[in-house]
Amino acid sequence: MKKKIITVVAGILAIILIVVVSEHTQDTTTHHDNNVSANKWTKKSFDQLKIGDFSKNGKGGASYESIIAKYGRPDKKSKSKTNGYTLTVVSWKNIAGDYTGVTLTFISQKDTTKTAKLTSKTILDSKTINLAKKWTMSNYNAITLEDKDSNEHDGDSLNSLTNKYGKPASLTLARINGKVQTNAVWHNTNGGANGTVSVDFSEQNTATDKKQEKLR
Image: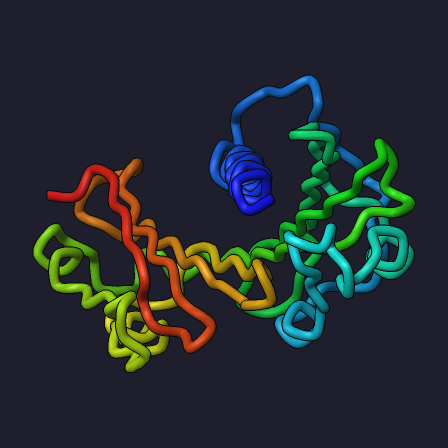
C-alpha cells in the first residue's frame, strides 16, 4: 500500500509541474475555460481550503464540485490516470492581492470529478521574483535540513528562507499519511530563466529535502 501511495504522489507532483511550470506546453488533455466566476481567490480563501489525505483517497478534502460552484470553471484543466486513480489538476488566475494564480489537485477512484476530493493546493506568486535576493549554489548548499533520525526539527524554516530570498514563486501543501507537507519553489536564482530551488518542509515547517537546477 505504501508503495502504491508513493507512486500516486509522484504522478500527482509530475502533473502539477506540467500545469504550473510548463505554461507554453501543449497537451491534448489540457482545457482552457473562460467561464470564470466573479468570486476571486484570496490568500485567506486559499488558506481555508481543506485538503484530504492521499493515503485515504482524499477523505476530508474539499470536493471538486463545491469549489467549481464558488469560483467557476478553471482557466486550465488536466486529467491523468495512475494505478486506478484519476488525477485532476485545475488552475485559476482570478486571484486578488499579490498572487498570480491558484492550482488545485483532486483525486478520485472513478473517472469523474463528481467524487473527486482535494489533496493538494498550490498558490503562485511571480510578482516578487525580481525584487528578492538571488539564490546561488553557495546559498543552496547552506540550507540546513532536519535530521530524519531526530525529533528536534532543527532544519531551516520556511519563514527564515522567505525572509532571505522572498516569497517562493509557488507554494504547495499536501496531506500524506495524516501529515501536511509543504513544497516551496523559487525561481529568483543566478541560473537564468531555468534556474530553480525547490525545498520540502515537514509538518513543523522545517526543511527536509532540497533540489536545484542550473545554479552557479
